[in-house]
Length: 283
Ligand SMILES: [Mg+2]
Image (tube, rainbow, N blue to C red; front, side):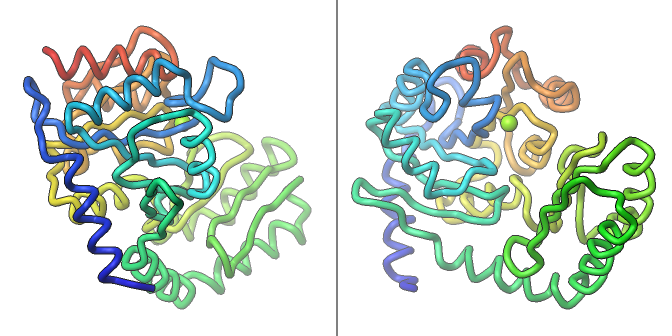
């Protein structure tokens, strides 16, 4: 744990985002992975070469890029390295906004102040919600409602449920919904027999606000790209002034992009993102 070192990294990251895009005032580009930067290509565990070129092109113009995905930051590091991106991200965000890290040429450095903040929220969450969440998990198992339950109350605080059928799913969500109504947790997908519930503080919007604070940037200087409903916290005007999504995006995300004057790509995955971003930056 070294705050001074961490501050230095944040400052050195700023060097890459000093310039504004000539036509827009974008200085930071934050993107989701599955279905956004990744998809429609093989091998899956690296960015398509067009996307690599796009990221390096942004960096050359002085626009910083940052990740924001469910993927662990350690795996992200490997993917970025394997992809052959020449520029370095100004931030990596992983595990649905739970982890923020910096990437240098030599390795990964966790952002300690952010980790400490999340830990403090974990403690509050455990006090407020822990017992109820454990009780619900036990009851879902006892009543035989789930085929699969992924729940580790002492680690990431999320719970993933795969209900055995639609009627079991209905019963299960009836058990869970009072907890969701407290506002302490939310559903990632929000429909269907399989879903994950997460603590409210673990979301992709909050971590962008943190990046902006550390980099000295504003929402109006930030462009986001995402496709899934779990990206919805990025598509808010107090998080990003510039929004894009590919053709394969969730209808709810497309609606947010439209509402906030963003661009929806005609192509799918990263090709749609590049197309939409270039259109948005140059109009
Ligand atoms: Mg996605």
